[in-house]
Structures are given as structure tokens and as C-alpha cells.
Length: 163
Image (cartoon, rainbow, N blue to C red; front, side):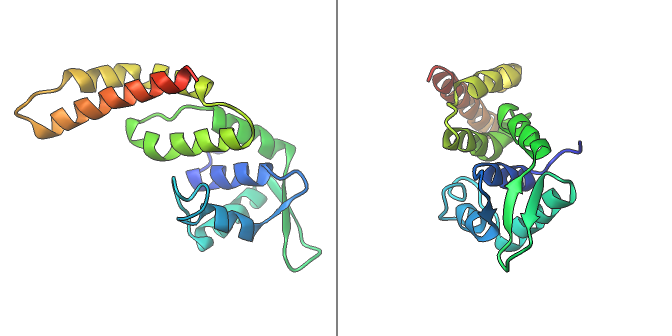
């Protein structure tokens, strides 16, 4: 299966939350800047519907087109893709603020805690965090910022993995 974008994977996970189906507008509201997921990472209405169309084209969701408002449901293949997405750590420190936090919130919404994912995330990035922390030099403000951010990130992930 091809790799899903953050938009597609997030929409897929939101559809999968609703066994009896969900309307696109519900996802648009959830992904709006003041929505439950949008407060972490937001997605415009056109991009939400584009992601949903892509998911349908790849048989990860289905739409009941019998009414004006198309009710969407996740397929078995889509549920497997959702599970892989919410269980996989991000590859870069820069993605912690967006993709990692989105995954944690999506996990919380279906009753999974953050501990397992946070532990795997720390393992994935630990060497990189070490390198950033050890690069701290007082005369280089950028290196100093990165080192302190990396130290805070490590502490955050350690705390999350013990919850």
C-alpha cells in the first residue's frame, strides 16, 4: 500500500472512529482550527474532502451515495492502515509538534494511551536528540536553542512513556 499523507491518515482515523459511518462535514469541523484535532493541526475543508476522495479511490473508505450527504465508513484495509499510522513513531523531531501529537490525540479518542507510542518515539529519536543536546554552544544561539528544545523533548517523551 502506498504511504498516506498526514491529511489522509488523519481523515482515515477519524472515519474509523464511527462504526455506523460519518459525514464529511463532521470531519471538517473536527479539523477546523478550533476543532478537537484542528487545535493541534488543522486542515481546510477543500483539503479534507480531497483527502477523503483519495481514501475512497484507494478503497480505504466507502461512501453510501444513496443520500445527498454521503455517509463514509472505513474498510478492513482502511482500519489496518489506520492502526499502522497511529502506532508508528515519526521520523523527525520537527514532526513531533504535528504528526506525533495528532497520533497521540487519535489514540486517546479510541481509548489507547500514549505510553507505548511515546516509548517507541523516544527510541526512534534518542540518538538524534543526543546529537542535538551535545551540540550546545553558548556562542551559537541556534545550536543552543536546538539543544534545549531536544532536552525538553526527551523529558516530555520520557514522561509520556510512563503514563
